[in-house]
Length: 347
Image (tube, rainbow, N blue to C red; front, side, top):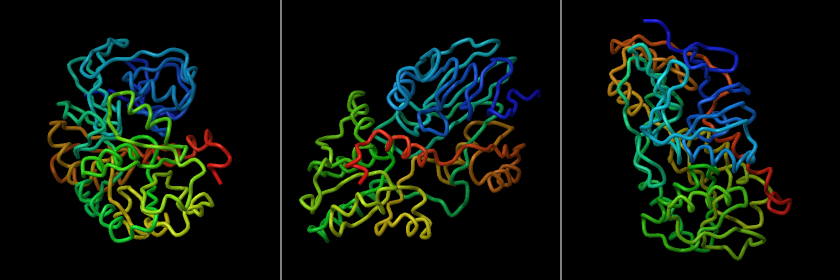
């Protein structure tokens, strides 16, 4: 089989479509899997994505983030060059999609970031049969086995019961994670107002506009110690920032798959690590590869070698891509969203 994709300095490129998938620098044609900043950059000539991803990019970068846009829904097919392109739910964040490229009797799927756990804030992942599967590998080590999100949220609520006089400050990324934590809190029966750092407001409002019911939320604004006994969400970088001092002696938590690693929790200043991830864990990565039926597996941005080894042990032809410019997608988002927050909020 000829390779359906090639690697260029800009990232994955499909020659038959004349388009890059999630390029790391501006290109003429880009297919974008989701709105996190390591996958969705501004400055492209034309962008193809789901409507929600395009709207998220416009929210973050401004309406003129690219030359022109083309939105397609899940399951719709668009001819791009000699390739039939369709998008399919990835379960990562609102609007996230896998990209199916069909040409010359071959089917190639680029996963983007994805997860298999249930998430009330986005469409669930759908396995797509293919010949070649390009998969992320953020948590591609056997140590990473994510618990149910509800279990982690119950830990937060138990802490709130134990320490009712302290603000509970939860570090959560602006796109996807913050909204999922809020939705999981509501599903667990928490009905009080949840307070938001300014960097989380726009995207939380966007989720609400898309019919994702998140209950009562309010900006923190100038409040501080008067929020004792309340839950406050903020970007992870704010947990150790001057901004957090306004709450006196808060209980600090962080929601991330990296909270499985104690050193990461200490580095983030999280007294209460919450293992809530928007990426597939080891078991779900392996399960997904098998479910696609793909004989060729390309592995990118993460613990590539471990997953390649597993694939080879299970009869798959696998290779690591060693692509530069991707991470868990969220630290770059935190920086970008913080740029639009008032000086007082940053302090």
